[in-house]
Length: 136
Image 1: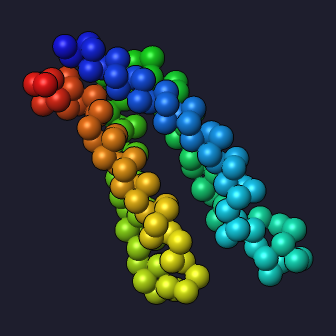
Image 2: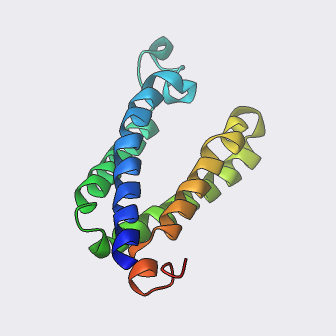
């Protein structure tokens, strides 16, 4: 049963890793806040977008690579859970402070980050290896 659950974890890692890649590139063109509209009439991307792309591309690469041995990927899962929850909490505060500009985050990015954290927690290799996720 544990091996089956680790295979599920590996599958989730591959789906998240490969699934986030096209989503990140779509973000460049579909997400209007990605552009710094005040800089040269929208011809440049906002600097935060490059930071987010770098972090998430790194995470995608590590998820795909570590899917070969998911039992040893606990720290990667911890990072994904903690960073997703903290990112969502920061976005909630920013949305409340700048309601008129940031409201779309409450219905898109923020719930998605919590869903990702929940999926990562559910498939966390440590839960599976210690047997906490094996009693199904």
